[in-house]
Length: 126
Image 1 (cartoon, rainbow, N blue to C red):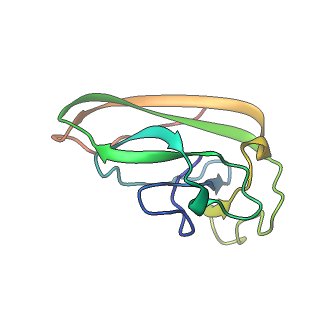
Image 2: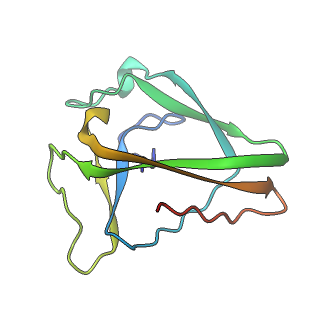
């Protein structure tokens, strides 16, 4: 799962990180009510070794019904360590340098939410 949270990205733009999860693990995230649209990654935001040319630019979501969707992959061809979570962790966030690192079977899952009256969503990959 791409989190899009990255300390080296320019403000208002996100770059590549992924949540690496062990089978059966649970990850909880808070949706701040933001919608994201693809934008060209400004040249001053490029990070050495990062193959991303686009970023996700956030804007405030208006009230309404939304479908929250997520994509997962069963394998990661990690190119830059660390590539594994600590043995005691069910999940961890790792940096990714290229979308090509996501391999194996692609899993998709989604859930509906009525924002802002509800903000909790549970998405299960089976």
